[in-house]
Length: 123
Image (cartoon, rainbow, N blue to C red; front, side):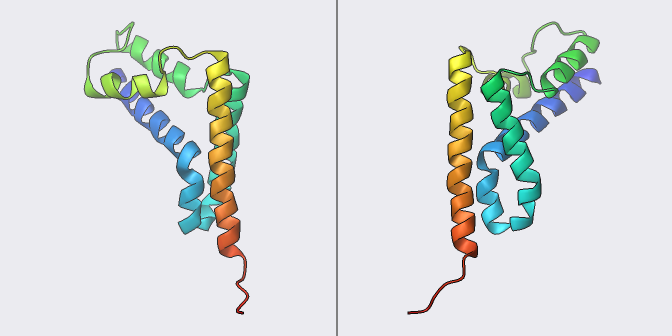
């Protein structure tokens, strides 16, 4: 059961990363989600810029240890999602680039949100 919970944490972690990166574009169509996306994007960027560890990572590892695993198993979730969340060769420099990409993508998204909300002047 612990391994199932660990897999759920991986899926949630992956979805959170997708939300951090692309959530600004979702806000274009659902502006009220900005209240959730802005803090998530700030957190995601902070994790990358500072090298902190997301709390979901130790939780997942804890659950895997409780389930008797010391390393990731060969199931679908571990095989396909873990390399996306924890890519090989992840260095501090790569994390800074990833953080800058998160910021840049979301600046573009929120610029579009603001342009969309601006009243149009008819010529």
